[in-house]
Image (cartoon, rainbow over the protein chains, first blue to last red):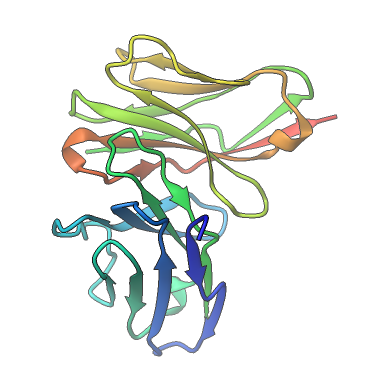
Length: 114
Length: 115
């Protein structure tokens, strides 16, 4: 596709349930990032993948959060036992393996935990 | 610690005037990249401009320019000739070289352009 896609666009779940969020990066982009954006706030780094290197998981807020990436393609962010404070927009971005490379963002997944 | 600070939660500017959005950063890295992104009310993130720490010239992209003052660790965004469509959230971000591709974002500044 032409841009980064994310699914679902909206997800409403009950507290305690697990959710999976999907990101399809731009083809050829070896770097992929996940961010969380709470309402009215900035972007909070969660994790990034770069090629076959070990991912940088330093931003994951708890062990309920995990992410995987298959090669240089699709990534899945999983949140287990969701809590109300997990409610946010989850943004995925991808970029070329270039230090100055801009990140191209997807439209985000709005997660609401009831 | 790596940190981005945007001290202006909200700014107003008159249409056709210039506006400066402040950004300061903190890093012990000598090599780093600085970015500005725009987020309209639709929620999409739009890349505006990039400045490398070793770039001698301030970056410019159309009506956007980055006032880079390395000694002061500031990377202010200047928007010239503001337009109504410039009303949005603006985020400053930093990528320290030793962080790989990890990118740290500031809290953002909401810009309101008045007709």
